[in-house]
Image 1 (tube, rainbow, N blue to C red):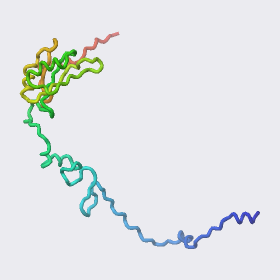
Image 2: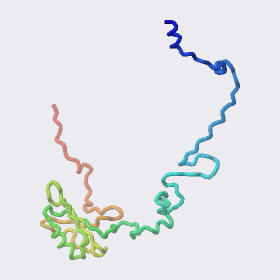
Image 3: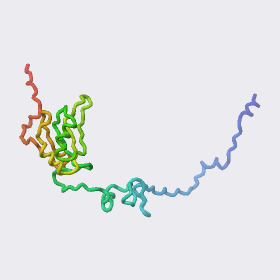
Image 4: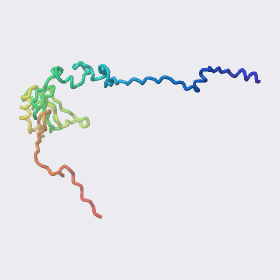
Length: 203
């Protein structure tokens, strides 16, 4: 049985040089300091030209990856159409045309009813009369588009405050610069918008 045990045991051969590694206090050369890492986005290193990658770092100002400010400044700005505006309060043209907002529209009004009123002032390019999905009735407003400023302004002046299906409609510009005009300039008390709660019971 002892012979079987010796056959099962493997002989391990140690290299004599490996055994002495722990005992020797050999002076090894100190490793060189690791080079400073440079960021590929911010540049980072002191030497050489600054290399950048990613969105917004290309040299071409008209490229789609150029920063937004550089594309909108200078020569790139000529690519955009300008909507003439003096910067003061007043109507603003949308991309399609001059849009008029009609509020106070009766819930049973039809597109033809509005078209009959507003075509007197010019060609109506587009008319949106939105319906409530739940009830199927008109939501109470309409958007009407005219090609020219004069047509839209004439429609606003003539139709504002008129009656459509027993209901007074208000007509104004859909888009404007500056604050909207207030119709009711009457001063309200600070508590006018709050509901009045019942008096507290005293026990």
